[in-house]
Image (cartoon, rainbow, N blue to C red; front, side, top):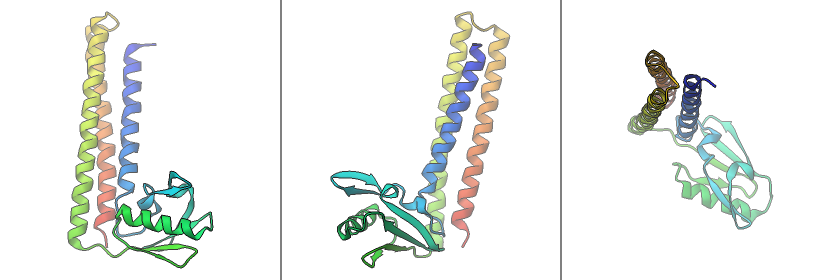
Length: 189
């Protein structure tokens, strides 16, 4: 396989992975609306094993600011464990149980909270940008090594460096789109 193509393909995959990771990470940050992804990271002790909440209960959004958790197992003790785990997760709401389902009422965000969350999203996105820059550095190192090993000519190496920069630029613009979308979601009432 052409070493230049291999380097660019690997870089492209890493950029996609970084973008996907950022989207997943930001999904857990609260906006003005309820979303099941808010409690995706919650783990509940279930028969001695820490189990993701999504694997043991159905999570729905009956209203704009409410999440409803319906456990598959109707054991009342399990509902108490889920309630305890949600409280520990500290997502900014207190669960209310009726013995069968758990309701999470999300209070509206204040302007100050929205600004703080938008800043947090920006920081997380900046960390993803740093990761992309590290990937660029590594890809260029591989290109230089391929040139040194005689697999690439001087011109081919220079073109590869330009392709790497173009891939990174495209990846950064995708990160900017994710940031813009999430910030808009947070700041709108």
